[in-house]
Amino acid sequence: MLLPLSAFSGLFLALKAAEALTLGSTAAGQGVCAATTITSTGNTVIHGGISLNPGTAITGFTPGIATSTHINDATAKACKSQALSTYNQGIALAATKDLTGQDLGGQTLVPGVYKYSSSAQLTGTLTLNGRGRTNSQFVFQIGSTLTTATAAKIVLTNGAKACNVFFLIGSSATIGETSRISGIIIALTSITVNNAVVDNGGFYALNAAVTLIDDDITPPGVC
Image 1 (cartoon, helix red, strand yellow):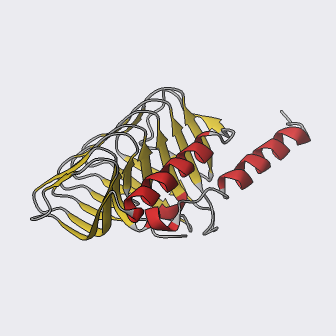
Image 2 (image 1 turned 90 degrees about the horizontal axis):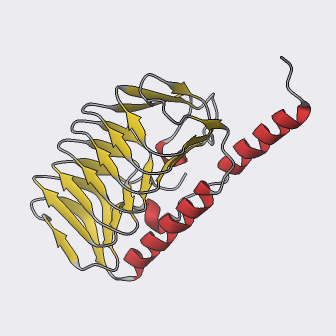
């Protein structure tokens, strides 16, 4: 069945809008940004800063390591503000595909805006194919929770970059142990990162806590 030109036009505009989504430079240098507490157990390594606002309790560093720690200073406030701005802009984008009810695992997706009206699950491997464009973006609008199974993976191919992958979560995220995650995870409430997760993209909990267990986290940086 042939689609009307207007359908292709709408898809093109949605994809171009997604490619305009960015995370501010301050937030992009922070591996973890939370509102209430940041708690680490074990030898977590964060290859960037950690920021907390408006809470005051960061625990587990040491033995955990971060390049810098920010509590209610200008960096912490900017991190939260920039992550919130990215969330609001991204959640307002027109979806190019509704994946509600489908496991992200086992799928290969091209650049676009993907919607889950409620929760999303990742079991196994999600492949994101940038189609040869280093500025291609993937936006996941998740109505409630994101949960990844043990050893879940997000694999980036053909030019896709972690700094251009956005998971925007309406409540909380739970990352299964030994998962390998590529992408920026912004949750309205809490983020729980289980044992031995390797992340490239950072964790941003806008209104609650981030909990870590012996994880390795690299902030996304600026694309």
